[in-house]
Length: 322
Image (cartoon, rainbow, N blue to C red; front, side, top):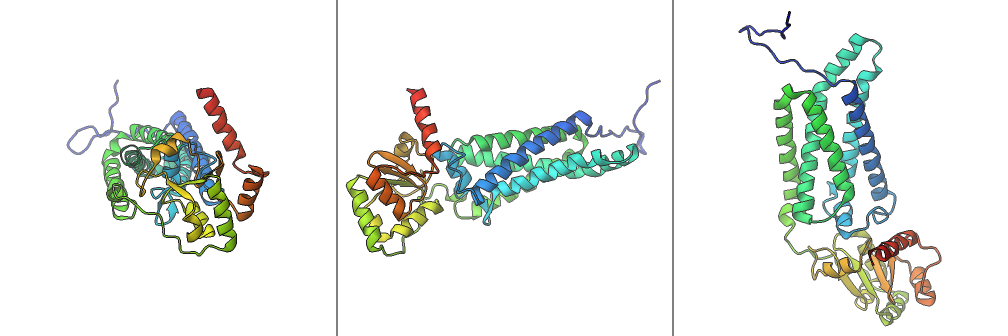
């Protein structure tokens, strides 16, 4: 005897949700954990770890994760992603903590709508960010593609399990896309602002005698400073040296949207972090103190260089390519 689902008052069969079974739920938990670890690492590096240079080897990656598109209302996007993955992990684990079969079914049913809404929002927002990355910034960011693959897989897993809730999924997706577009279109550095040539912040400090002396020595070594208009570390470096000293130094704008952009030269030089200093033919990454400049100019290097490993990786990549 064949059994059918419950019938409506008109006699038609009402589709039943199959639920998120054990294997899909475990996969969801695994994807959420991976996304949580990734976004937690990126958030830590952005807020406490001195920027993304140690995790990114391309200027495009830096512009995505450290540039004007990397935050909303001053909050890193990676922090929003971290919250989304944490919520998905919690919703995935919650039914597994039940004490009985009935409790498990009740918890599973209670989390369906939240899972559909969350998965739809994360997938839609990730899709929009991929549009910005590929269509606007036109940069390469492996961390971004990895996160997009995770959220997309989560969305497919959840929405295929709860296909009857497609109205909720579509509504959430449309609201998310509209909100994302509104934020990025109306804020500085947004999509409508992408074609606008941007100037770096004006240097407001007056150079000290020490800074002027360092600048003269740097100039004699044919020094170049590579940076981007949006880079806060670059601005901090310029402010430390002062306006008069910076006039003696050849500044190279690496962002394609910056004034007098020399992005091709930055790619040729394989700039892996901002600011980057080319002093007497050698590369040094990160903000440099007056003592750092003095040591580099006297000895041709730095005894304690936090970016030494990054330079070694770049050298190895160049050797392998040749």
